[in-house]
Length: 320
Length: 257
Ligand SMILES: Cc1cc2nc3c(=O)[nH]c(=O)nc-3n(C[C@H](O)[C@H](O)[C@H](O)COP(=O)(O)OP(=O)(O)OC[C@H]3O[C@@H](n4cnc5c(N)ncnc54)[C@H](O)[C@@H]3O)c2cc1C
Image 1 (tube, protein in one colour):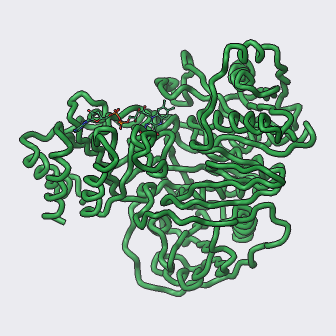
Image 2 (spheres, rainbow over the protein chains, first blue to last red):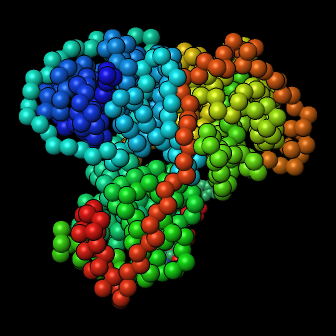
Image 3 (tube, rainbow over the protein chains, first blue to last red):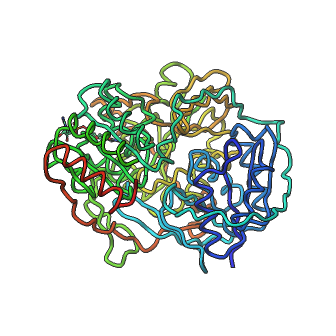
């Protein structure tokens, strides 16, 4: 049986959904995973893990871990993996994890696979991931004798219910190194959005050139507000300066895989599809019945978005 | 100060991907190859830095089948890079072996001030080689960078989740992985293309760099094309009927609301 270490991200004392997905997966495979938590509040947050079948956590409850610094994190995490003797390391494929784990893997002379969409922890650990912008997928075959590091894309694994609480033994990690660093975090400018990031969002409402002008994104914001969605966009409208690049979906933007993706006035160019075709349910609203987006859609509405979107907002309001 | 830029040759985004019949990999016959789009930002930034008088030389490096990757190295030199290093390897070499080879090649060249690369390659989406090269060179790194100010150290801006921006200061030498937005990559000019033909390409092997080609740590297997999606359900009626039906289907059929 694998010895699994889960890198569990949390904020304000709450485990992130991506972490819960991994904890659920390990628990349903009958594994007693060890967790790593870094940052202020790690100790108290770790106590929640008992309900997820975790009996041991490695904690760095230190403000020195509150802000991600690649050098500090790589040293700490590589050491924690080594000391734990884990042969499988799981993390959610967040921006932080994707920056961090390749460096950790290099330190440990092992492999890391990012942005996986399938994971099986029963018997030999296996994973699959999309390649060539989702034009195909491939299985991952580890040839390393070191730990296998797997980063899972968000929203791919179900989150179970928390079980009954039980005690979690805490092991404290050494304080972060401060001397001799080549990397200094000078400032962190928080984004204006209170909403979930696109890569974590369960519902995304995305707009394209069909919206005609920047001000019309209000229609999407209204729809997003009633269903708790995050707003995304095509590159055409990002390039036009209507919305920031941070919300661009696609090959040169973000890769997303929400449960529901509503594409409004987006034609469905291959580079856009590359970023969202992994979504579970895709709704396309477009006035052109031949728009390529309909080939990827689950449900399609041919119509004028300026009529359909407000009507949909009303319908959502009525049922949600 | 020398700058090294690690670039990868990838299939053009519009290329149709065909699999080998046994699923062991991709059939690359007929594929059009281009420079990984994010690496174009890295090459542009290196050339701009040299043009601003902050660097003396820009070397581009690539790992892959030699006869193929020299084309992309020539493209980078046509944009303005001074010289190139081609490291011959199979096209499915894993990230860590690729990074080892790149780091060894850079080390062998002596002093340098900065290593640039793209934030990820659009073919395998590994987003790993940059950070691994930095580790093997024992230098700081930053990925997903959309702004660089270079002085005695580099001050970089990187985007993270939810539009948050981190400003990092990296001591020299450092590795920086470029995101879209860093600059606007130039096109190779005709004179540039002519000049590039005469620029030197050094050819290296994995063996020569002390990297064992078979000592990879992971490989991709059992390739599959995505499952066929069931055909789209088009919703009839006027807009209010369509909206009503959609809300119901999302709730009761798709169960995503
Ligand atoms: C290297 C490269 C990378 C790229 N990366 C990305 C990327 O990351 N993300 C991305 O999105 N694109 C990317 N693109 C651009 C991509 O090719 C398309 O140009 C872009 O996605 C088009 O955006 P759009 O669908 O909003 O606009 P359009 O293609 O112009 O589509 C607008 C749609 O709105 C519909 N419409 C108009 N009016 C209405 C109305 N009243 N009601 C309903 N529908 C209406 C139209 O029928 C049309 O289908 C990339 C391109 C390249 C070359």
